[in-house]
Length: 419
Image 1 (cartoon, one colour):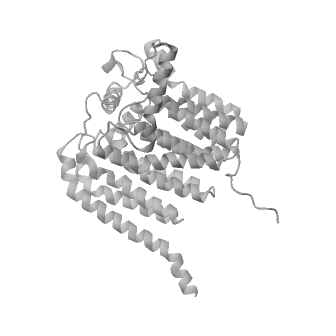
Image 2 (image 1 turned 180 degrees about the vertical axis):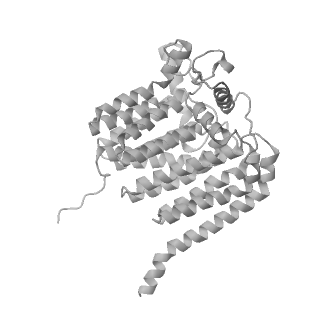
Image 3 (image 1 turned 135 degrees about the vertical axis):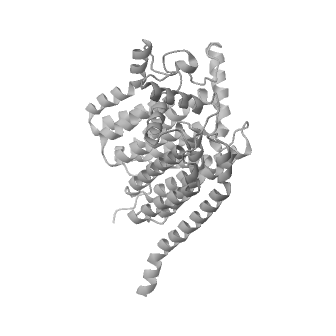
């Protein structure tokens, strides 16, 4: 009897071992077969880079399995790190291969700004190189992250893309380890599955050189530090989120206000506001202009059509975005839709389910976070679907654990009668 119990206890470990070998075999084979395509085209993203999705997706698959089997141990995480390295091996010969971006794309602009920052050793955002103005036009924060990474790794190349995937994987590990310690097993398992489903798009976002993956990473870090009750670091992460993506400004403020009010550490508002004002400091210093928000906002409504006309356009724009949260966009190709379908419907359903699990006031705080995340992108965000849906859903889902920890309430469930 005891030997059978021992066998049952060892079964999850065996499954993980077989999964490790299977993922490594598939990843190595596909990487070796397709790496010539990667080497033949220097563009950061395209059909030729499909094999580069493997390291992040494969390692996240192993991590998710470990979470589902309740095996988030040190040895398992070490095995996951080893798997990521193994999956990167087919690309060792091209780690230093420079990458280029499509001219006019967001990634092209961030790359241009980052290289100028390094070349001139300046903190000026360099928007004037492309827009002929000294203040921020495009999202401000990521250019500095990219510049720092280029300086660290010695260039903008394939190795930088894989490095960023490793950073994102580390953030995913931190988030899952942190939330798994809170005892909400069903929600933790759901988060793990969602992060796995979203990992192909996260890898694509990294390859593209977009900002959304880093905004999600900051939210992961904020979640980890809220759960650890490390309030100052959590507030720093929350303040940096809108520096990377300004559409997250209200989300950041809702979560920061919740921390201040419920922890009674009102002094944390000082470092939070100091960091939140980074775009303003830049524009005042370099442009002598009191401006906080960027000017490239992707407005989709005509604001000069009168209040009734504007309201109608807002409603039409909002209605057109509803299918986006079901995984569909009428203007996108089949490959993009396939990646979106993998995680968007799941994320939308998961956000609603997590909202229903909270009791008041946590439920109202998370609802405010959801509205604050989605509302700006209904009328301001467009292009490169599902980038905005990805960051919005990830932030809402991760915020569940922050709100749950801060409000100190259990999830709503049927109460047992007193014994």
